[in-house]
Image: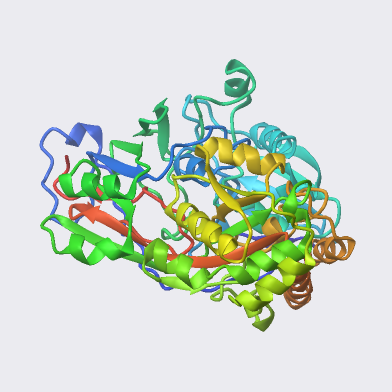
Amino acid sequence: MPRRFSAVAAVTAVLLVLALAVVACGQRPPQDQAATPQEPAADEPRFGGRLRIAMSVDVVGLDPHVALAWQSHEVLRHVFEGLLTVDEGFGITPGLAREWSLSDDGKTYTFHLQEGVKFHNGREMTAEDVKYSLERFLNGPRGAELAIIDKVEVTGPLTVDVTLKNPSGTFLIGLASPYTVAVVPKEEVDAQGGQLTKPVGTGPYQFVEWVPDSQVVLRRFDGYWGGGDGPPSGTGGKKVAYLDELVFVPITEEAAVVAALEAGDIDIAFIPIREAERLEALPGITSASTGPSYEFWNFWFGLKTGPMTDKHLRKAFAYAIDRQEMLEATNGGFGVVGNSPINPQSAWYSDVHAQGPTQDLDKAREHLAQSSYNGETVRILTTKGYVAMDKSAVLAQAALEAIGVKAEVVYLEWGALIDAFKSGDYHLISYGYGTFIDPDPMYYNRLHSSTTWSGFNNPEYDRLVEQARNSSDFSERKRLYEEAQKILMEELPLLVTFHEEYYYGMRENVRGFVPWPAVFTRYWNVWLAGGR
């Protein structure tokens, strides 16, 4: 008999359960009662106003099946939805699928969709939209995330069967990713020439405009279906679009972000931790912390061409840099130094992930002497848009030069840096990654020889992550990722530096915003006290 799931689905592992408060939700008053509304109390949810949100860089595309940049999905999460969502602790919860079941052979999932869900163009979503969207996703640049899918079949107006190539412990969590595996209307993709530049989804906010390097504007979608009956948690549960508009404003300089918050030109932003205490002392401003985040900063080595194809030079770099210094320079040391993509708070973490090189200049010089380095300049690519990337690159340059390696920091615009990363044509990139809610997207999608852009190729590593991908046993998968991590630390296709703690600065009238250590922001269920 098929196994059925609804409110909370079984998943390979539930990561750290985070005890975060959830925001209370209210119902919008009927339009015929709006003429003489009763003024809500100061802390009661209210409708109206526009929330101005600072972004450290601009979005890089607005098609959810194509966009790879974290910043794009911070916006698109409010426009699009997928079949499944996650709660605060990464347990799987319903999204556009109200319930689902799994066949006895562990290969076919049957999804039963929510009724009455409308796209922003007014048309109701059907199972055909889900089939189209999953197949389009598989054929796009993010397709490796769900490559386990063999076929998608419509079995009823609101029922879809998804058959996997083999049983998998990663499929549901991949489908539930906050980097939304979005359901989109085919007619909009066709009308826009095959790629969405004016996104149309089912989410609580609808797209209005994108003015590059200026703003992205979203407006409340009054036909929104509500997001489900459960309490708000993670990216799931009840969602209310209280605000008339969300306005995302790219501001690349830290000082400019702080100045805009102080002046009241923006309402919420990531702020440097060193500024939090000073800002909180000012009238009209408050702040909130994520705690140590699941995000991580790192260096990627180009293994296709150039000096970093030499493992001894990579190891010289690993022993030359001071990662604690990089964390201090970025945000005053708030966070933890790391060696692994897996955060120390995660259930996937073990002593194996704690092991790695620490600064040792003698060892750095020993490896340099064993390398084939002959005086060429090592180019470190980075961007001004992310402080951690910028400061880490500058400190890495100094560390290399201290052991006798010529180095140059090369600044690119964010989109150009992503293009360079995808090309694999670089020596070093100072980079970063958002939260991964399962190890597979990092260990397989970014590092398996068939999917990586860097040129990393290790058959034993491939075997381990393939086996982990196809297993549904948490303990077995954890052991396999430990073995894979040992290979990463030996071969060094990348070097993790630290997991940063984040602070949000807010105008004091912002209500209902819940920081999440996963660092996925959500502006549904947020309102402005007193309106604006």
